[in-house]
Amino acid sequence: MGNFKEVLGVNEVSSSKVIDAVWKALLAEFLGNLLLNFFGCGSVVVMLFAPALHKPDFLLVSLTFGLVIFVCVQSLGHVSGAHLNPAVTVGMFAVGNIKVIKGLMYIIVQCLGALAGSAILKALLPEEWHDTGLGMTTLNPKLTALQGFGFEFFLGFVLVLVVSGVCDPNRPEAKAAGPLAIGLAVALGHMGAISFTGSSMNPARTFGSAVISGIWDNHWIYWVGPIAGGIVAALIYQHALRAPTLTTVKIIERYSTVADEKELRRLDGNKDADNFA
Image 1: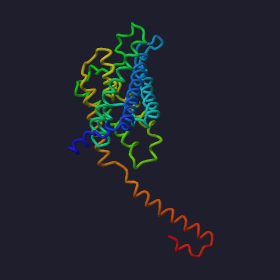
Image 2: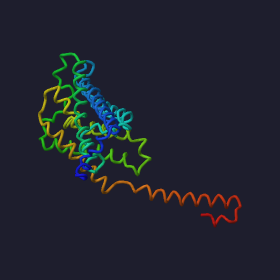
Image 3: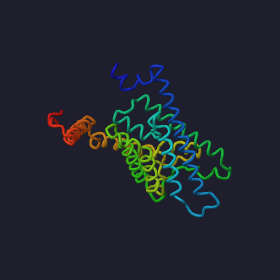
Image 4: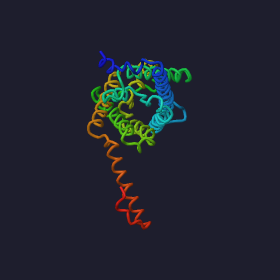
């Protein structure tokens, strides 16, 4: 029973102190997805229907999604890890970085946050724009559902690969650039695939738009694709690409420091420098 509770992560939601931290993390995930759908889907509406624009501006949408993810990871990462995406959460679960109960709670609030963001966007837009899809991701009619799944698979793969790399505890130098790298990965995905699937990369993002717009065509590819890609990326990074342990790095640094100190002693004229250890 103890092992079963450990797998589920009961200890993560059992004590009052831990519960307080979990609620803060859930609020952070909710707010992050709310902002993602509000600003990201808003940029899609602007691209397609603002009177001043005469042709689609995919760069606008790509940068908006990338920037809002950058902002949210930068501001919320210390609270929840800023998954902001069921594909990231499931990927982290696959390598043991989050337990079942907490992971499910993350996914639920991610979907609710995206739903709230799309609902607020709809409430603030003119009524004649409500039939635009409100930023809903749709499959290019020239592609099959399987091809759409393939694109979403690689979108989830590249995102979780970047998340795994910048969150590697053995790469402390990558931490500062993490939010920017993750935001750029999202922007990259939109630049490369928005014409094919709308470049969801995020099941919660598409779920929120689908509920508000009522468009559910090929909805499964926006869940199965990114999540499958995220799992594969997390497993590959964990078992083949992760950085060497810090213990090795510390040993190298220690011997480098000793050598430097010996050299300084020689320069100072200390005859016993070679006996320094």
